[in-house]
Image: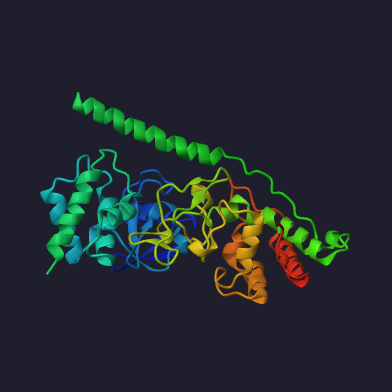
Length: 152
Length: 205
């Protein structure tokens, strides 16, 4: 069945079953492989994309339920995105890197909604994004650094 | 050495996640309990006693995991029939829809997504703290339910409408595989609530 998806500002028609997770439409049909498969049950956050600016786990979102505009890591832009990417680079957040796309999507979404998050705010926003290299302390430090860089 | 440790960690994570998926996929759905029909309470001649008995029957639903899990005593919901703390950690937030960056809608859609056993509904949210039921007696829940300051400013007609028609309330009877539905049906529960109101809305002690 054909489904039309708006992904990164472009309209794509994908021919998949209605309950196909958005993740697979993005990766296999549209060819954007920055978004990762981790667990398939919304427990790890590797598949995080935005729908209308809000973080969503694409592995548990059927294409038939997608009504808004999808943004993936490939099209992430804006001052918060630049600040997070710079902090990630400076602080060497990525280790194996597998979860980073999801981490960055969640971190930027947090900063757009809360430009000066506390440790607690960061933990609450990010604890659904698992890192198998356990870089959690660096992730928190980098989000604080990105927030500071956005001040003024 | 470091590399071996890292590889072992990766393999471990993979196994852990696969284990989660397999466990959820194979979890059977327990059969739902039943509710007594309103008519069966006619044998209780005393009106107040009948009203309290009807509410006690409603307690099977109100104190069921499908309801209590999202009427928690803390800011964190519970999940599953075992009522474990919600994984990952999520909180009520300002409006019952989660914290910035981790809203309910990050994982929960407008409908259940059965392939991953993730439940959903268009109204998916945590009940306000004033409506916490977890750990309370049925009598306390009853008084809370009647109190407009703690029930979302609802009178009896609004309560009946909420219980009989709200889709998130209705989700308790269609929770998807692996979760026991609330007892009876939403219609039966709505009928009990109506009968309870008509008999004076007396709370059990």
